[in-house]
Image (cartoon, rainbow, N blue to C red; front, top):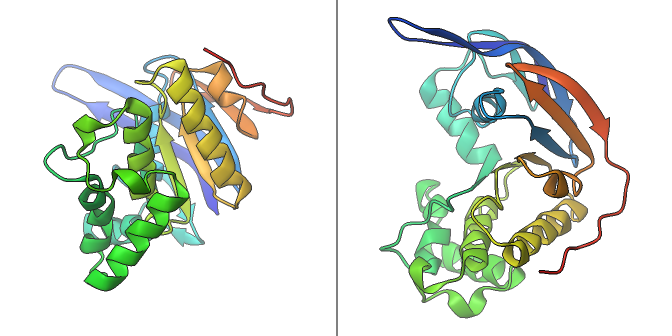
Length: 233
């Protein structure tokens, strides 16, 4: 599904040149759940942004669904992004002035889905994620775990080919964090392809494979075969 080969990215200012990614290569197969780990500044968020078509690389190849992404212009990247990628962020990125229903519905509006179909899809995904009773509420009326479930619903509403999760439990306590990781595990079991950035070894253990980065390079990859015991807070 995703092939990254010899990817490099440099950020430049008038005084400083920073090599964020240095000749990075890896593959993500359809249906895989893969984690990227590493210290701050290792390049993992830059890599996730490029995979999510929020940024572009300077060199190398990024092939998504057999199409080269590096050569695409911003408008073309935006179209591919809307059709294929769902994002789950650490800070939820919900719009406080909109209800839960409206937050989940937003990607459908951007994709010109008819109103009747939008209502049906929002209600269905909310039921699936256990937040159907919260559709009329606003984000600030929800717990952190519920807000992240809304964010997950929004990420899934367009049925993306891949889910990108950036520190999805970073702002949650242990109980709510466990709920989100169980949710991602359930989505993966149902066939979702997930690429997650995290600092947590525990969260990474839910995935099939962990990629470790340092100084803009991949320094190791390992398969995660152990069964995860859910922590009780």
